[in-house]
Image 1 (spheres, rainbow, N blue to C red):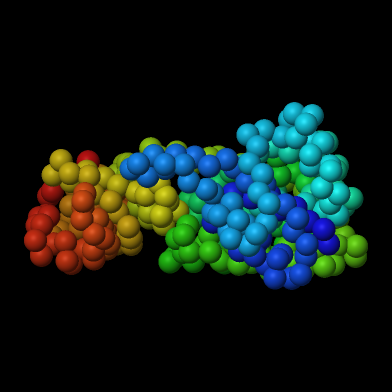
Image 2 (image 1 turned 90 degrees about the vertical axis):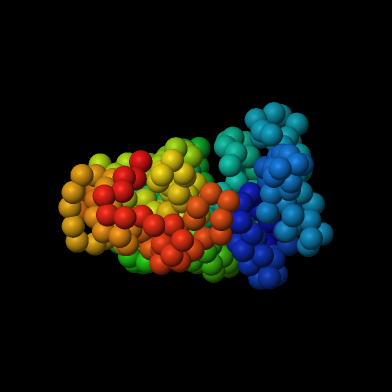
Length: 302
C-alpha cells in the first residue's frame, strides 16, 4: 500500500521499520518538530525522524495539522492509508478522511482500558495483570475508534515500564503489518462502554516516594516509572534514586529503616531497596552501596 507513517518516540521506530520491511511504499513520515535537548540545548531530531531520514524517506514536522495548507499537503500525498503510533498531535477530521482507507492507530493497551498518553506506565501502576496492543481505526475521539486487532501481553512482578515498552513495540510492529495486509477482511468492533480508563500524561513529581503509601503501591511505582521519570527519595539529605525494590516483611513508622540492609517501613508493609543510584554515581546493587555508605536501622528516608 501507499502509506504515510506518523510517530515520534522510540516506541514508533520498530513499527515504521516493520512496515518498510513488509514492502509497503512509505512515501512520507510525520513527526514532532526537533526540540532542544541535552546540556548544549541543541535541537535533536525525534527517533522516528532520525530513522526515516536514514532510510531516505521525506519527513514533515508541522507544529499543527489544523491549517488548510497542511491538510491540503496531506491530501496531495494520495495515500491508501496512514498509520499512527504515538505521534503526539491531534488529527483533524480532514486528515482522518484523506487516505482512501483512513488512519490506523497502534495503541499500547487493550482498549478501552488506558486511553490516552501513558498507557504503558499506568497499567503497571494500577497493578494490571495484563495489557497489550490494539490496532484501531481512528476517529475524532481520544482513542475511541473501532478495534481491528488486539493482542495481550502479561505484566509480571518483574516487569518494568522499559521492559513493557519494548514488548509492546515489538507486538505492535507485528500486529500492524497483519492489520494492513488483512484490512479488507477485518471486522470493525466497537469499543465497549464499560471499562473505560484514561492514562494521564506522566509528570516528573510522580517519581517522589511517599512512604505513607502501601508497599505494594510503591513497588509498582518503582517498576512503572522506570526508566522515566524515575523514582527517588531523600537519605541523609541526599537524593537517592530507587531502581529496583521488593516487598518484604515488617512494619514501623513510614520511611524508617527496619534493618541495616535497606528495608524501609511503608504505610502498609515494608519495601527492601535492591538497586539504587546516588547522585553523580553509577547504578549499583544495594549490597555495594552499603559497603561504603552505611544505612543503620532507624535511619529516616525522606
